[in-house]
Image 1: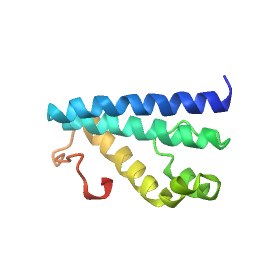
Image 2: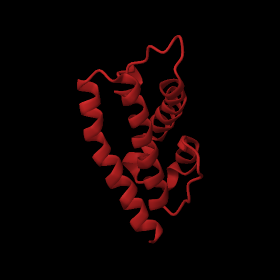
Image 3: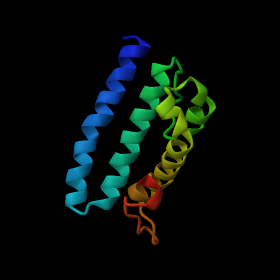
Image 4: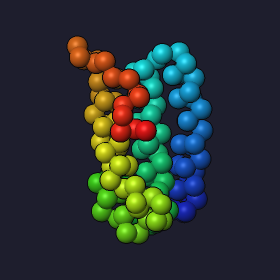
Length: 115
């Protein structure tokens, strides 16, 4: 499988996971929403990077690479690189709370900057 088809596979998987997020939201399963949202964003961003020939590292937050290569991204995506990087970073951090819990874990996936 080449980088292009792998990129398409990542983007297809990310799109399918959006449906799962809707179900989890309906069930008020917020920690699961955060976990799935993080994986969805990670797959989408890694798919975008692969599409432009960048091999993403094996880490959850690749927002820094989106910023670094924003000039190589399609214009609509490049213009949102800062927002994508912020979302990726926030979800990576919140994912840890969602997995392991925290006394102050009161996050809802309706954070204002996600809109």
